[in-house]
Image (cartoon, rainbow, N blue to C red; front, side, top):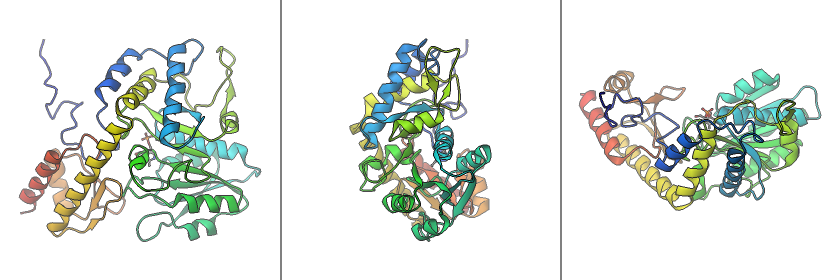
Length: 358
Ligand code: PLP
């Protein structure tokens, strides 16, 4: 039998040239836990009781990261499911038949899916010049029919953190709920000065994905709520199961995602994640500097995500070279300095930029 070399760049599990993904290499403990619980289904908690207990511990762990004692919630399939359920809960709890949701234009496209599926109006509001939610514009767009206001703590394109406490005030003014999408930023932000979580503002629900910077195996997202009523607003009866109700969008779920989230948390919280965040921040600053020195326009990174204006031909040549890079909606290069991205990778990337731009 031929052995597949683990670090071969053509290996589908290799991250050696991936600079575009919001996900990263799972921690070894997360991989092992995922394998152990591959056949467990947390969607059927009375049958698969071990994984149900691990899910409860994982939700508690996510609560610890996001400043919420006694959190309600579940391990989702990812940020998309968590965001959909946030809109779903807000719609079900709204006092109006014609609810709307106000999001910054930087919000992830999962909110478009949510609005479409749930029949709510999505009001997308321009961001400020620096890519953060504009509080005045959000306030102008919100009204008595607003069920939910969304803030993003770590935007997908530029890594920006919205002014969450100010958005909470806007939500309170119109009696709406506030959701924070920290799907990507949630494992970086505890090591910054940003105000982003339940402990900082009147946040009702929050998305935080272990399968992104949390280093869990895919699929592992997180949906957290401040109160039980939110979960109740989502729950449907589950007649053929022994458990009482299900608040997830999907039925059968991956025990691997749940167990790996817990294992990664135990291995890395807080010091490992702190070290990761610091290294990622240094890498982003280094890359932004290196691209700036070469005359490219660079968007100053906030969280470790670097955007820069590269000619299209150079972008294409770098892709040809095997670099997995992505673009913003306005066609800037976008490099996500996730945990697997090393300084050596970035040096090699910049060396290719130098060689290919000639
Ligand atoms: N929210 C944000 C801020 C994201 O960056 C992403 C994905 O990159 C999502 C939500 C969706 O997450 P998923 O792809 O895990 O469904």
